[in-house]
Image (cartoon, rainbow, N blue to C red):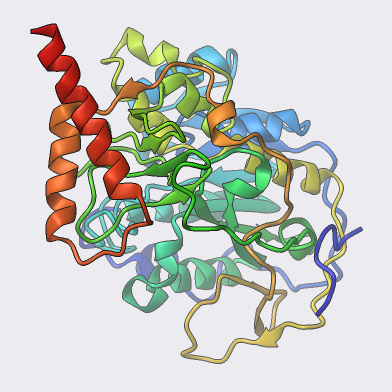
Length: 423
């Protein structure tokens, strides 16, 4: 086994393969020897959300020169947090990228690719907007592209979404690498996996995205009463989202359009929902990063903004690697055969596609226990929410962690006792 740690040292119904062709491309180049990446990149952030990628890249020394975001609440955050950077709302009306663009980033909409969404796929009205990225690339010769989305896209419809995207990059002369990355490895207690795909016409993207690797630590499932554990109180039948000493993936909202923060079971038995300011911190943002959104929407809208964001710490790591690439060792990688499922990490430099053996943990940064990480008082999970959750668990066939259901029942009993005392 090789060492791992620091190994470097569109519209609905439209055929997406027509929008960004799978063969040829106006800027396709003959692939030569990769050149070093620039130390300082000028970045265009498409589908920027509240600027998770952009904030991380700026911390690594890169500069945003144009942002795009159609959601008014997110746009209010971007205008306040990135003063002086032009903001274009609708990507479909953006005529071209600025001259001198070094990197285009796009955390394109995941609704059609998410397991929790409608799974319409890459042809869906939302996720199909990634075609706008390729339209803009066809008009401007951009050396670097960074895409981000949910890992379910590797499986949905046999991985067709990723196949379409990668074919489109290759048609335009890009070398590429992608990897599922877990935010837990970057010092925040949130279990959040996302696919990051980096493509370049100039350099070897593997030396940025795949050069760092670590071993995913073993997690003890039976941890009730010892450490804080996160779960989704809106679930309980088919899933739980159980996370030991962390919270499960923060969501953009529920299927009925209301905020859906996770619950946390503390070692002392208290069950509560984290404050939005701690949710921001769980994504690597400073406290009250999304506060400007309250000027045009309800305060609860901040949960959607945070849940849809990219973890800042991950983007900062990528930004630092863009400035100082590592050296990727592909000695244990294997060729991807036609028809094989997409693996959790892969790459191509112009000929065969290869599966990579890297994990979803580029590093293992130290992090505080979840209980100590939280700065703000949690809101107790209400009687109604707790009762509803317990009712669902009684009809489920899930295997719950030892002591978990009893702890939630005790929380409900305490809430009921408090009501009786109040009366």
